[in-house]
Amino acid sequence: AADITADLEHVLIPADKVAERIEELAAQIDADHAGEELLLVGVLNGAMMVMSDLARAMKSQLTVDWMAISSYGSGTQSSGVVRILKDLTTDIHGRDVLIVEDIIDTGLTLSYLVQNLTSRGPHSLQVATMFRKPEAFSCPVDVKYVGFDLPDEFVVGYGLDYAGRYRNLRDVATLAPHVYS
Ligand code: PRP
Ligand code: MN
Ligand code: MG
Image (cartoon, rainbow, N blue to C red; front, side, top):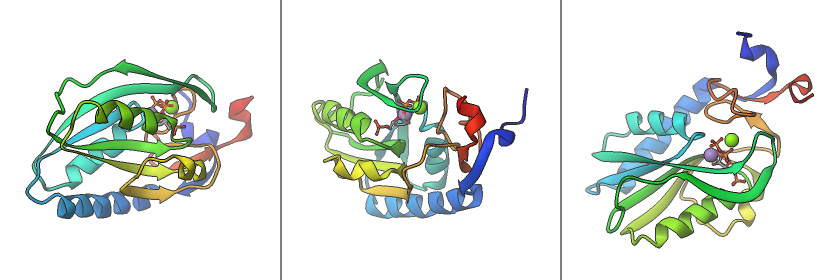
């Protein structure tokens, strides 16, 4: 198959900066949750990288579970409709839960998720996201841990996709125009 780096325009966040920030977030989450056993809820598919890196960087006792949520089809625009494609297998009632996302863009996915998980009666519910777009500030959900604030550009890599592709890129980068046409 073709080399995916040929489809990139420019790198916004190189892999070493991502890795550095993961270590900082993990240390902060560990410190904030001393004595608690967190359940990390990763949002598939995008959170695959941040979930595995963050969990490995943390030193605390923890468990993981996954939800698959989709608000995007194959394009670059949100469809506005959030669907649960796979639910948790863990009962989160009374648990300390940390939602782990790759990116908050419009905040639609997260708003839906927080409302949905809150109704299940967790002891606490917080949010960690590796990336955040400017529009996310209009979303009412409180996001405790943020890796990087990004400009309003469509980016791929480190779990972020275009039509399902480019998640495996280590850097976060914009795509060259020829990819969209
Ligand atoms: C992406 C991303 C977030 C969500 C953010 O997921 O991983 O989950 O969109 O966008 P929002 O703030 O506008 O809701 P997507 O629906 O593309 O599914 P994926 O994780 O499988 O790529
Ligand atoms: Mn996602
Ligand atoms: Mg996506």
